[in-house]
Image 1 (cartoon, rainbow over the protein chains, first blue to last red):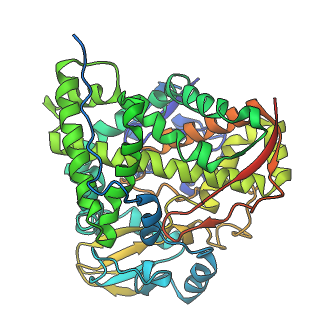
Image 2: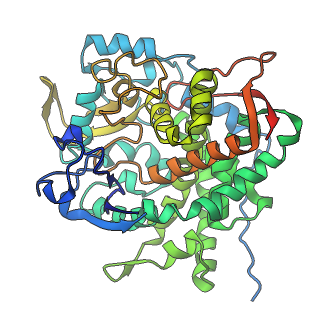
Length: 54
Length: 418
């Protein structure tokens, strides 16, 4: 399974869950997340995420 | 060539028992949460230290400094995510910096950012996922084999107290003949907090050992974690020995002791709520939410610290530069405005709010993915090997104690072999 992962802390974005605390509703596709959104665990920017095989 | 493993020197006083003495540091409080709720009702920033709410044992490291407690979810998050004002170095140089040395916990940006990325790379979810079968399963299966035929066990003394440490020994390829001394020194190094001379002694002896181990693995690199870290380069440079040795010292505690406590609390929560244990046994897809609830309910670390690096205000309170903030993570995770009925263990609660068991911000726990993996594998192993697991009705129920690091002393169970 492939997921977007924050390389600063390892947080995995789960589209089904979204990031409700960061105003990203469940079901939001990665492409639709704004560029100024921050990793909910460490605060890194979206640009710090990479697609990885889990 | 024959590899000779360096030898870790024991404490001079071999009768010294750090496992008993550590309770002076981590506390023996049966339940700090009523007091935490009282404090939360008083406000979000309160003068005083978390430790002195529960213990008369003096803090010889930062006890003399001005301290405020930070309470509740939102204010903890506000501080943890603002490292420019609320730093780590000013606080941790007096505490974990004495025990472990120059670790990433003790650093602020930009130094922290640079080293953190290198260490985190070795503990990303896609990396540690591969360790489940290779490192964790053999350890948990071996430990369970020793008691599975008896139909009863103390899951603390025979399982949780050992398996995360043994996973680390496997990763570092440390022989079993040295593991008792390792476990002892890993715990003893933190006792600098209460002025025990065995604290710095353990720090020095672990440092000497890891220095020798680094030299050996650089000469003959293998596929273990030390060989990887000893040879990894960032921006064309190797990690400085001091930073690497400090990290390895911290790994013994951060990777071993906290996962021991987290797993013990997970089992306590489930076994004292048998209907939730049965639900997980019947549907293992519930394991991740059971782990998150255990981390929220009784996070392994109830309190951490930050340093006010410039005059500032927090929720209307003036905080002068130099103030130590006690980040009461236990209050964030039991904040009734975020978690209805917060003192109840309930794996089915809504999970809209991420718990702060591993903190948040740039210093969020590097090992959180390994911790979750280990807890998952441990729970699977218990479910695989036992049926009808329940608390032993003839022995005391598990009693979680401590104000800083919480864990029960025993989890006595009975079961049928699967």
